[in-house]
Image (cartoon, rainbow, N blue to C red; front, top):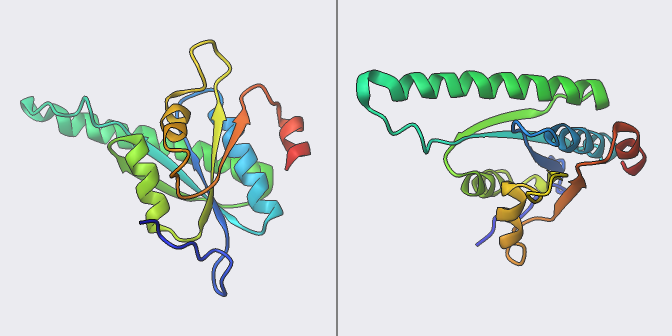
Amino acid sequence: MTTPRRAYEAGHAPKCLVIVDDTAEADRAVRYASRWALRNSGGVVMLRVIDTEDHNQQWLGVADIMRAEAHETANAALEAAAARAADVAGITPARVIREGSAGAQILDVIATDPDIVLLVLAAATGVEGPGPIITAVTALAGTFPIPVTLVPGNLDAAEIAALT
């Protein structure tokens, strides 16, 4: 069962969710989401998912060190993305760090915040496909709880500004 959206009720405002990862196209998604928020008097929630698949090592605290380093990297990525959002649209996004599967964490963030009304992703331009997150989300397209906007990875800043 999906969480009812409340973004347009009194005391609420619409938000879009954008994934901040290490791909080249992530900046385009942040730019689009930030301008969307500005135009819609809304907000942005930036999500960084830490893959915990390699963190199952228990030898001499290696897992704890890897987790701490992953959180430092996540915070730095979110800080840079938030600076981009402030530069592009003058907004201060919310920042969320989650651990686990990207697909599960995206769905959980959406479920826990009834003001999120849109997921913004940017597609990779390479021959290997649009990217793993887009592939995972499109597999759920018929049952996904909110609309998804796919920003073509080849759009530049001016083209994104013209669209938003």
